[in-house]
Length: 290
Ligand code: URA
Image 1 (cartoon, helix red, strand yellow):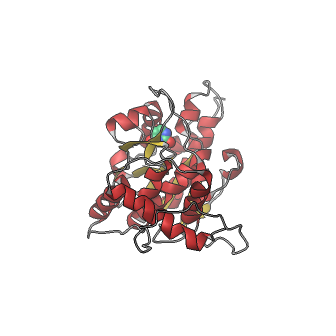
Image 2 (tube, protein in one colour):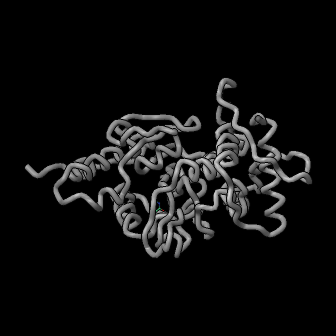
């Protein structure tokens, strides 16, 4: 059995070599998938690495790599450019050909990176693009995006003033896909997460809001329901993070239910943390009528 440390450079380099030869999709077996997963977990791809997995973790073995692999190189994201906008552009460019994402072979090709102000104080994070987002190559532009726009407007902000991104930068693929979507898997989110981490390093928001349980699962590797995580401040990369329901969840609720108010209370908490003005009228939004 080959240890993770022996195996991962060979697997990563082998995939890189295939990519250079023009191969865009490969089938990988469970062992190789586990090596890639462990690779992201250890944060080798992130400038701000996650903590190492304890050495007692089981060491996965590798399939025999090609005999002619190049010497090991680390797969790292570099943040290039001077302005925040240039740095985000450099991340976008690297994300397009990011080997760990491509190697999964389960995501579609068109990238949907982020939108908004790369120097914003407020960053909103969703799970992955859907049909509408892929078509426009912009996050949150379908029905969930319209709901999100209403929330942002109620806060007295516009999309251009905040930064909106997703954990996963590509639409998860399904068989015979038309307009349908599926949630990104933990592997898909882990493969993309180094970019979101780098975006946070660039944007340096004062507050992050995670939209929905899947985004939180990707960010914190927590599979607790939103109901248990909301209404409290968490931290992500040292930045205060609030959890709330996904806008598409609100779309599925009937009129008069309390979820709208819960989301609004999460937004009020974020506004207060950001030092934004909150009027008495805003404080009463979505309260049950007396
Ligand atoms: N849902 C998300 O989580 N992100 C999008 O960009 C669109 C819908």
